[in-house]
Image (cartoon, rainbow, N blue to C red; front, top):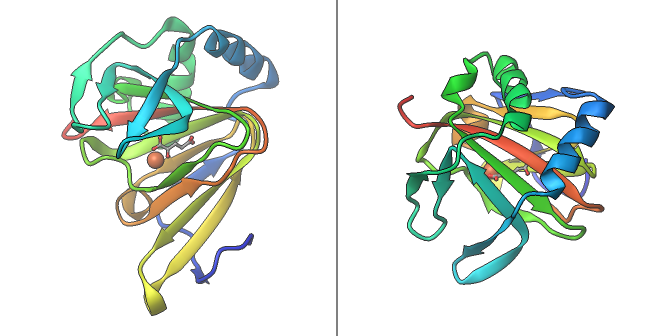
Length: 187
Ligand SMILES: O=C(O)CCC(=O)C(=O)O
Ligand SMILES: [Fe+2]
């Protein structure tokens, strides 16, 4: 399992589903996404190489505030249905969609998703394969895990995978897009 050091343990609450969308669906989603206007992510004064577009609710990385924004575009409705089905929840509760564009060599560093979001996160991968890494605990308690995210696959982070483990994506080899759906806390 890659270069991760520590005791390997699969995070409880992690679900991985290959081929959530077909080749044709992936192609048309990528065509739609190519026309989106992506925005920079500035965290702690640093501009990340990945860029993002929010629908439903906008998340401000500086103030941690959520504000209502443009509704989910029609071309993302079917994937939201499918992601909701995978997570066993009604599509409407996935109130926020985050589309992330990862150019080759870009990453997302270690984090837990913001507490402003609910207990379940569902992510769809398009384009490049990448790794999704997990870690929790320190020293003797350190636990690690990684899963390869194939194009067209989806994952669910619920339970401990969402709340106790941190996750990251190391340098993506090729252009990758992800569509991440989240609930608002309390919904
Ligand atoms: O790109 C992904 O699949 C994961 C993104 C992520 O972890 C996040 O936006 O919080
Ligand atoms: Fe995340």
